[in-house]
Image (cartoon, rainbow over all chains, first blue to last red; front, side, top):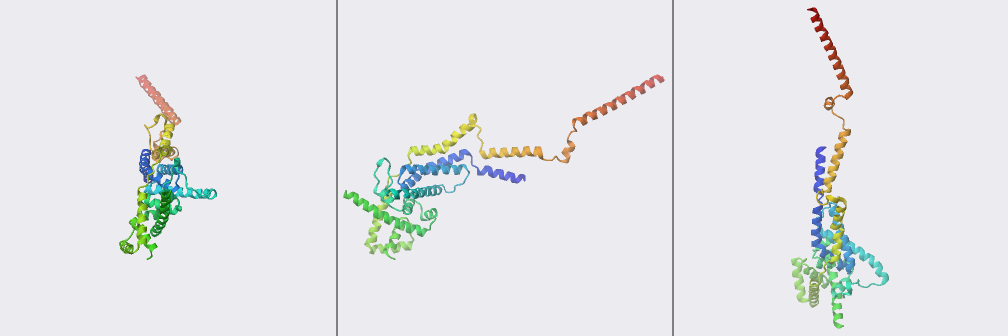
Length: 181
Length: 159
């Protein structure tokens, strides 16, 4: 009985990281991924204020998980998956709203004009946009994208082709239209 | 394979996700198909635009907000709770709980655990028993002393 208690106690101590270690680990992860996370959210949502809120929510969740002693083996993947889910929820919610008010591109802060690339990216459906962002902006492999989106490598390859094709169409049309002006 | 399928290969080639056989097949097709070559060129141009895009950096106010909601929140909680012990005697929560549990278990056993036979025998007698035992012994001493004096008086008287 004593042995069991000792083992349990040792496990309890080992599995619960010290507060200082949690803070250090969180700080290191935050410094490493803060800009990547923010860029992902902005690229997905096209709204910097909303992106700031979402990134904040995700990092607070990460901190809570670390404090609870949860072992996060792949923090980058964890962060991107959490961000992705929140972004898709926001897009789903905003689509309901935009359907009533008529669709327009999300606002850019300080009234800065969208680049042709930003505009073309936001003309894509969320799944295509996400595939482009994960591959081109975040540098994930097909296997990683497939794992994150609960898909397969051939499906990701096909999705990326369709996404790039649509992006290419819109992008070059926008470039041509801006040159004409 | 048709052009759509070859274009999927062009896209995969950009990502390095193409097999050597597929690459050989694609290169052969590109030599003969100007439309697919134009597609490949445009895809490269689009790729360059994405690489050269202005990078987003998290705004300072968002960064401050996040840190104050995480590490900052904890720091303020610690200072509220710990008072003058702040930062000096901080013990990991798990160890603190283990200590509390160990203390409770110790107290529990001290109160409720039945004593062993040996320890019962070693337990000193209650005060009343010890007092009465003392009285009995004292009385016996008095009797002995008295009988001793009587005996010595008798022997002296006999002389």
